[in-house]
Length: 155
Image 1: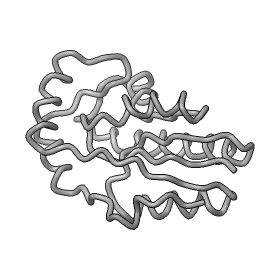
Image 2: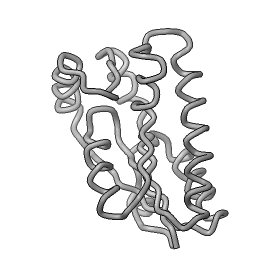
Image 3: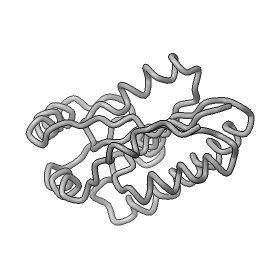
């Protein structure tokens, strides 16, 4: 049975770093929207079209993920999954395809996220998106941490 791995956490929490490790550990296809987004559109986080573009990329990556899960291959979605409803939606999608699901939550304190962001924005690596501090602060307030029951793998 294939498994959908959801990377949960805010920007600068270390999701992509862990996802890269897990893709080898689980022989999984890793799909990281920021890598696709920056390659296609550059660092456009402050442009009005950013959110629509990002949603389109995530939708296309889900289509790929769904096909791969049906083929019996593990998938890592490195989307962040900030809201419980979003996590539940993707877990239900995986179950409909006959796949299990697992959450990987990176819980990093606000002060550390902001410190990491300052470093990240001065040393952008390929695929890492520039993020203004004001945006991250707003996202921190919006983020819903997973509850203990969510962290149980579903098979």
